Image (cartoon, rainbow, N blue to C red; front, side, top):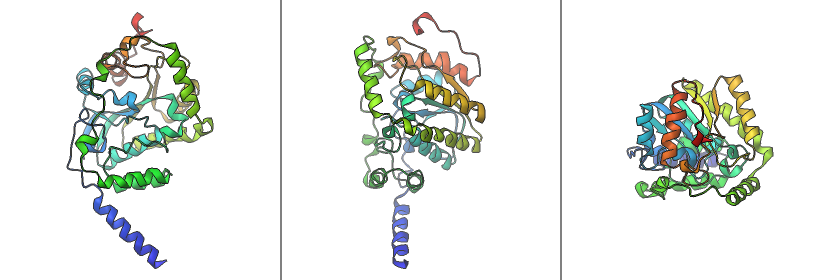
Length: 306
């Protein structure tokens, strides 16, 4: 037992040595997909964003600057591309606060599929792929029961040093495109794809992470509002179940919630069937996000949003 404890102490010492050695590297939100290299220390933000790639698009290319200009607020975007779900969101939010940062209002752009799919949560292979090694995050992965493969792959990030290359968004300018047509066949294929990944028995387990996130936010005296983003696919699988759950949680835990899934049903706001283009980001920010942050009643839909 003494030998095992000695080995454990040596391993922890080595990991502590490598932990945080890239904290002096700082990028802007639109320069990298990494969160840890953007977060910094002891910073104050007006708004923080959580979500998947559908939230990350609000910072890619010039969108982040557009959003800050429209809102007239300083924004930190902690969304993760590659389908980062509820469990990854908690990991990144924990680290943000642990570094002494503060934020007035968290906006969580929730997607229905992250409540049902392990590939968006404990089996997600993307949410730490471009993040430097931090011992505290490793500990979070262990406490939240992430698979050993995720833990080992994160430890391997110790060897990475070319963060500027690794953290770059792979398709710059994609958000300047416009979806040519809403394709019912592709939408049906997408529906089948999501349903293949769904595990409805996981819904309650993943939903509990909303309460965990709310506790973290409350502890640090921030406000949080959940927003279901517009989707071009009508009757998205599981959306009704998620809507009822967040409504229940918002009543019991005094958090904000807006279901906007059926807003902006117009291809001109999207570059594919799931993601806003830069016009969509600007329009959503001006029409909905700004009002929500200022607690102004949302405007009625215009004809091109239906």
